[in-house]
Length: 250
Image (tube, rainbow, N blue to C red; front, side):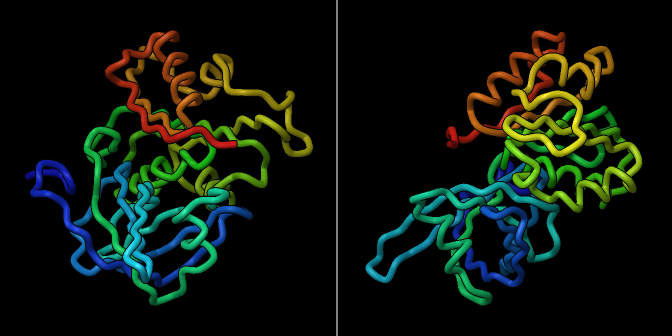
């Protein structure tokens, strides 16, 4: 049986309507959408979202799915992009019950399957945590015992997506460890100075290569290339390092 979105007929656009909105940071929100006939998806997949203006102009962007499938509901975490065409509307203008079009799920490589037992290392840069959070949530929902470690690189504590939930999961989800790297401003009492992720962070908070973990890295292009090179340089086989990237920010 094929995984959702893998090996299927061409994807079609479906109407989605907003049913819930949650603020994550001053510039990011999670949108819960109801999509009639949603076929399901795997953690790590994404969707295309399309807006159509009254004059017929269309704009589409790809957004990672932030949570496991829940019948016909999906969750996207959207960060406002200055001068963007889609994200400002989704955050500031999209009202409950309003329609948008979505197409998906998309992607079959950057996914984690709940029957996998190997250790998992997740490395996120900024909003790249979104598909990795879907994996964390899917692990708990499935009762998986696969050990997870998340290294999350952010500019400041205020930029952390899902901050309260991650604190709770670190406490309650056995086998899940979360470590942070702050690049501009660290919280009071934090050991060390703000810095970009480096070998010491991956060595301290990741898995040793001899345990053969699956590694998932998501974030801006430069971040992903740096971390992937670090992992391979530390002895992780390139075939076990899966990456998802997006354009540079700021």
